[in-house]
Amino acid sequence: MIFNNTQINRDIALLILRLAGGGLMLYAHGWPKLANFTERWDTFANPLGLGSPTSLILVVFAEVVCATMLILGLFTRFASLVLIINMTVITFIVHASDAFGKKELPLFFLLVFLVIFLAGSGKYALKK
Image 1 (cartoon, rainbow, N blue to C red):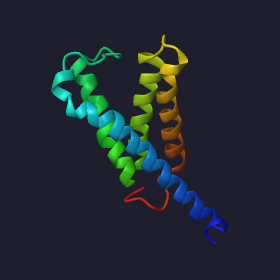
Image 2: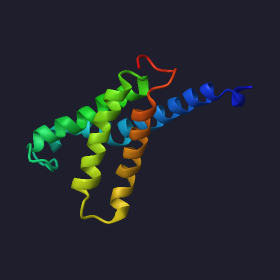
Image 3: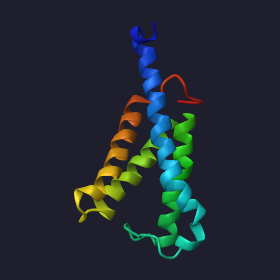
Image 4: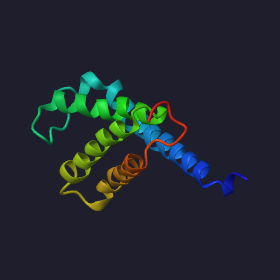
């Protein structure tokens, strides 16, 4: 039975977590930023003082490229680390003075990506 094999359960759980975390990040956050890239170029948040264009490029890299890598299980720890940094900045710098409701979603993504970083990609991945 599938439920008696702990390793298979772990690998399936990591696959589901990668697909959900990466897929939701790409679909709901990364893709809209990429689709409206030129409109956001000069007005995007600049929390680290790098300039709006640089901040937007870094966020699109994290939320599109790294989220896609996570979905595929390609260089999973690198991709999840970039997403952890992205979510840390969003949670604790961009929304630092906001109510918890604004921090809840990026904090949840941060925890998802942290689990993936610590656990790895699992068996069902292109490259660990």
